[in-house]
Amino acid sequence: MKRMLWAIAVLLGTTTMINATNLTHTVNAAVLQVTTGDKYAILVQSTKNLRASIMTASEMKKDNPAIAFEIVIMGQMVQELNDSELRSTLDAANKAGVKLVVCEFALQVYGVQLKDLPSYFVGTPNAHKYMFQLNERKYNTLSI
Image 1 (cartoon, rainbow, N blue to C red):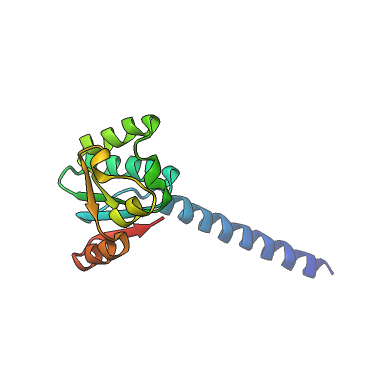
Image 2: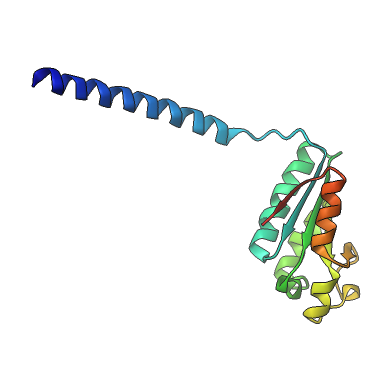
């Protein structure tokens, strides 16, 4: 019985050490923030994700001004692109060198005119097709 209890204690101790080691590796991996690519694009469909994408793009452009970073906007959220609260965030993205691309199909569906958006917005007829084209041009892409 004592041997069994001792074996269980050793097993639990070993498992705890392994879990602690895995946790350490996980924490170290989560800290990794260096990027080595030079072309990035994110497809967004909500204002919350747009704000997060702009923050990420701005940080990456600050670390490496030479990278290309595009945020492609589609869906119902195109109606919010003239929102005064969002405007300063969009202006900051433009100032940081982030290219803002908006889906013209979404604009049409939701009754928004490209000419009514800030002049730094670039239109694309179809956001999905545009993302495929960016992939073909070796962009690192993400859809959120």
